[in-house]
Image 1 (tube, each protein chain N blue to C red):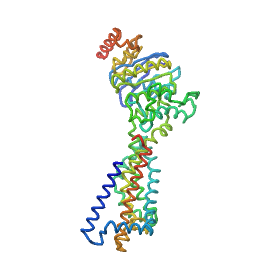
Image 2 (cartoon, rainbow over the protein chains, first blue to last red; image 1 turned 45 degrees about the horizontal axis):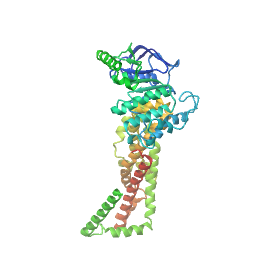
Image 3 (cartoon, rainbow over the protein chains, first blue to last red; image 1 turned 180 degrees about the horizontal axis):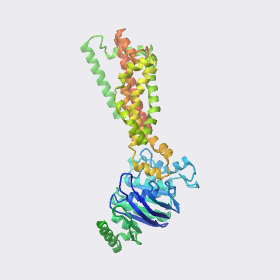
Amino acid sequence: MIEVESITFAYPSGKPIFLDFSWQVARGEIWAVLGPSGCGKSTLLYLLAGLQFPQKGQVRIDGKPLTRPRPQTGLILQDYGLLPWATVRQNAELGLKIRGFYGPDGKHAPTQMDWDHNVIPWLERLGIAAVADRYPSQISGGQRQRTAIARTLVLHPDLLLMDEPFSSLDAPTREDLQTLILQLQLENRLTLVIVTHSIEEAALMGRKILLLSQPPIHQAMIFENPGAGLEPYRKSEAYLALCERLRSQLDRA
Amino acid sequence: MKRRLDLLITLFILLLLWQLAAWWVNRPILPEPRTVFLAFLRETRDDLPFHFAASLWRVLASTALAIATAAPAGLLLGQSQRLNRLFSPLIYLLYPIPKVVFVPLVLLFLGLGDAPKILIIYLILFFQVLVLVRDQAAALRPELLLSVRSLGAGRRALFRFVYLPASLPAILTALRQSVGTAVAVLYVAELYATQRGLGYYIYINGSTFFDYPAMYVGILAMGLLGVGLYTGVDYLEKRLCPWK
């Protein structure tokens, strides 16, 4: 589904972050992208989201080169990105309003305008229907992230990109949301790429793990982790062993 | 409710102090509150409403003009680093100049009538709104813009769904901060080349007619104008920005 083909990318003021880097993601896979801070994890996600573009090489999704954010890609960020002046419900409706604003032009919105306009079922599914009329400043961090997730899922994405989505949440909230995301991935047949600096999160959620070291990144290590995602996995030998391996690799990087 | 009670108590104390001061000074230049209040009632049937309306019109017209021009300009500068770099030295130099010093100049150029008064208040409000809206638009977190862009928003939708609503509280804050200055400068501007407005009314009653109670009525009306505008902005903020 995603083909990153020998991309080179540098910010205007710096050394290259990716140098002739390639990577593939198949439909329905769950990837965790792990690495130390400043290694280019978030940059990779922005490249996949069509918010940054490589100087060389190409990012293709479903065979089409990315030239702008793709309507079927959802992006969830650590700080939620909610409009402070809009209620939970209005925030969840934002993507729909933007699509209505442009109409089905195939650029900003898909040409098929057959999505549902009712966000309430999504707010219910994410457990935030009770706070639908509150403002972001009046709800908890977990509820804010649930709002951001609802806003994205309302648009029926097939690819969900997440940048440190749970790192500013407390542990119980984080575990709830990790489980919820895995359930939603299954229900909606999503392809999931989740960027994290947490070894535990990568090992728990990523069926495949891409480990980035210090830039410039040319090649990256890939770890297979087929058991990921199930609640008992958190206590299994395989999980603990993988965490250990990831940790020693990260220390080396 | 608590706040309203506090305001009433404060008002009562102020009136009491005024009364005590009037007794103590015991001269026509400081009449008692009761005298001024009666004069106020008398003057509201005379030409006070006419002067009040003239002043109110000048403030409202310049406010509307300032919002209509400064808010779009501020949004533009806040969105574009290049434009902002181009104009920020100019704004940096002009913003701190107390606009009241332009009063004689503007009067020389624009002469009689409402235009010079409106222009001078407009200048004060323009810079305040411009700077606050610009800073508000520039301070929008990149994460917010990125995530809204990822929902499909291009430049136009970002403007409509992010920049425009974000500028509203900045406009209201600018008005709240500058409405007092605006009324003060209005007074100065109305001292010259006009026979309408509260500034003229205060001046003419105080220095030509020696009708001190009427002069105080003018001061009171000017105060009411300021307080009225301030509470108006407060009300709008509560209505339009309920998330704050």
